[in-house]
Length: 150
Ligand code: SF4
Ligand code: SF4
Image 1 (cartoon, rainbow, N blue to C red):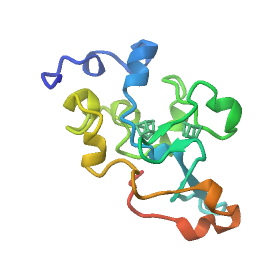
Image 2 (spheres, protein in one colour):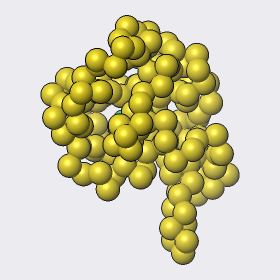
Image 3 (cartoon, rainbow, N blue to C red):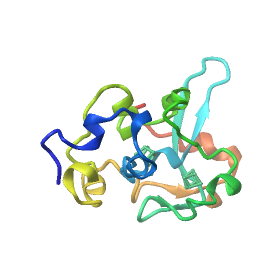
Image 4 (cartoon, rainbow, N blue to C red):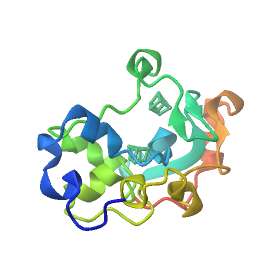
């Protein structure tokens, strides 16, 4: 557990992190793996509770992370030098928080030392989603949710 402000996420910028540090920032919430809808006129974004077919609904982790970009075309590839992508992320996301100069929350596994706290705090999507394999694309609008701030 590191709560003394000395974690690498406090001392390095996103661009300075090693690949391993970068990956460890992901809290495992699964929120970014939900389908989103964008209003063509207003540009407004809406999250749905419909998850990518590769998302493990219990662990809230990708089941094929190394190959994901080949399998799911619109999977979001995040990098420190492409912060245009960050507006798609929920406000709870560690990448977005650090990019905004905010600290990680108590439930982040890097702070708590426990990967379960993101679920216990109600941040993860565990128990609240359906797979895209069970929802026809034309019914996505029926699955818009309001429990994710972004
Ligand atoms: S929203 Fe951020 S912290 Fe959550 S799973 Fe996606 S990348 Fe990881
Ligand atoms: S491919 Fe994996 S990381 Fe990408 S959206 Fe799907 S579950 Fe998430």
